[in-house]
Amino acid sequence: MGLAAALVLAACGPVPGAGTSNFSTLSAGGSLQMLNPRDGWTYSNHLVARTSDGARTFNVVTPPGVGGDSQIADPFFLDASHAWVWVIRWNQSVLASATLDRTMDGGATWKSVPSQTAVQGGMTFIDPQHGWMITGRQVGDHTAIENTLWRTSDGGQIWSQQFQTTHRISIQPNVQAGDCDWLGQIAWTSETHGVAGVDCPFDARPTVEVTDDGGSTWTAVSLPGLPPRPGVVLFESVGDFESAPT
Image (cartoon, rainbow, N blue to C red; front, side, top):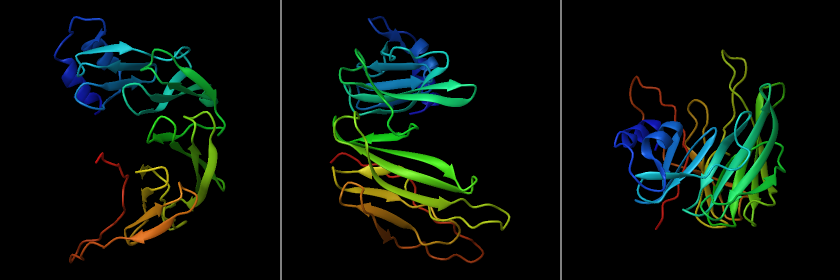
């Protein structure tokens, strides 16, 4: 749920209680993620807050040291107790440091882990111990993107590289054709099984990549294409996946 929805909730006004009011916290937050009808988190560059009463009130639980040049980036909220956030520090628009902060008690305390990957990335966890992270960087004089998939089995303290792929960027007009880009957001249903959507240029067949070994190897699976329509050019790709509880 984004800022617009957050501001709608904020219009309900402050609610008495131990937490911060809807208005002050939701107005400062840039995103609201509800895990169930009662528990949720909101965050922005300099704020992390948690609700346990359906967004009526929020408790600010921002990790220590956040503020000024140190900002929150790429958080992941597993449940009401477990969350991971990157605390990144900028030096004149250059990333100076990245530290992964983890909480196991709803933000009451945070533990910091220095980054092993040189750059922060988007994280996904399926339980308090097992998670994945994707990092990316430009290579080849900014003509290609190198994406790396990392995996942790101890809650984010140690990350091991699982897979790496490089794809060319489309450069128009007619300078360079792009490659398929598939190592984006991945939906994980277990410690071994994951599915990633594939974004290919122009008229490539829609495809997903599937792993059954935790991300070390991947297999392309083609999907049925859309039927042709006269006078219509179709650009088919498979976007981000999300796993739903069963």
